[in-house]
Length: 215
Image 1 (tube, rainbow, N blue to C red):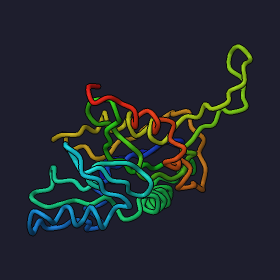
Image 2: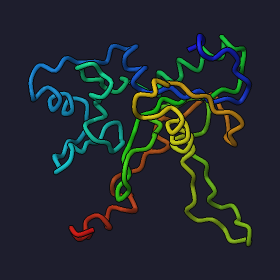
Image 3: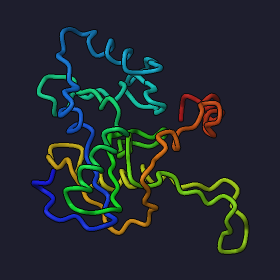
């Protein structure tokens, strides 16, 4: 990483794709037969559901297809997600802080996700360190003096989306990005579960149970 990033100013955020992390951790598997991927999905996930288009899974509290197991740009192998992306992000942050002599530094490990009722994929933060992943407006006033009751911003995924757009999803071969001057709150300790919600509390859950098939 330091080979490609010569200088790193304070208050930067380093973004690295999960595939590079997984390869460094040797999180790969050989495709032995048609059931190899399914067996890995069941091993890696808390929930696996077959659908018309893909296997829907829940892994580490996040909804995703195929437990994040990737076959693209894998040279015939299967690439699994990192074992613990938050731990990896924390380790990278400490090493980069020492290397570049910076104090306020963020690190994000990204993957791709699809959003219900929206086409195509976008970036997502599956692990991060060095900044608050959630910005809470509840209790504060809007521009007309009305108090916010529910508004919160997913900072980590917002940064990941912007970075993945630059890094690309195809053959760009650009696994790193640096975000500068982002309006975020840097910190030393991150709560890995701050972006998680229980399925019962998901505001869209009643909607999906009533959607007609024609939509």
